[in-house]
Amino acid sequence: MLIATLFFSIMIALIKIAGQRLNVTEILLVRQLTTISIAAPVIISNFPVSLHTAHPRLQLLRVIVAFFAMILGCSAFIYLPFAEVTVIMFSKTFFVSILAVILLGEIVCVHRWGAIIVGFFGVLIIAWPDTTNILSIYTLMAIASSACVAAVIIILRVLSQADKPVTIMTYQALGVGLLMVVPAMYY
Image (cartoon, rainbow, N blue to C red; front, side, top):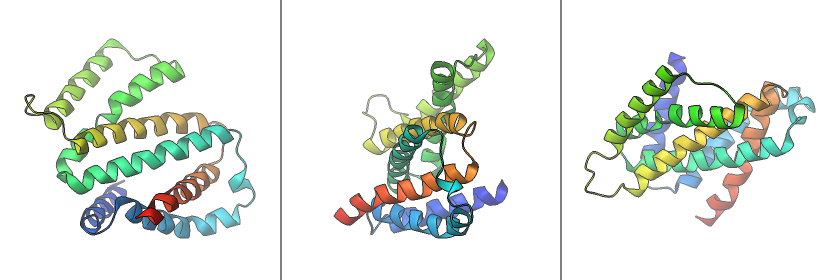
């Protein structure tokens, strides 16, 4: 987990640096091509199982939501301080809890709701310290990205009950990669 956190931090730092000269979709296309090239041996060795899914529509929805999560989140990381976006991204816990109750029928006890709400207020204080000013578009992007990440987490909970991990990884890598091509070509 520590190594994953290190690599995530390095990736975000590189995105922030590259974002000064390149459009976010170009950066994310390179990221997805890298992901595909790393995952290709696993995808190919498990073919055709890597493409067999019990939930094609849910896989498509996950790819679309992940696409927006990446664009919104990386845009926020490019234009806002790293620490601010990281704290705002903690709001995904709030969104996951709400979606789990609504979509999965999970029960969240009162003391956990209290902790989630207190945490969300902490995120709001970081995101909007001066309530006399309007939230910046990049702060809103970070919050929207967090909500999208929460939706992806909930979708993964459903997909992982029927689909193999290699299938989930294949759709994510290829689907988001294909979606990134169109806006990256525009810029």
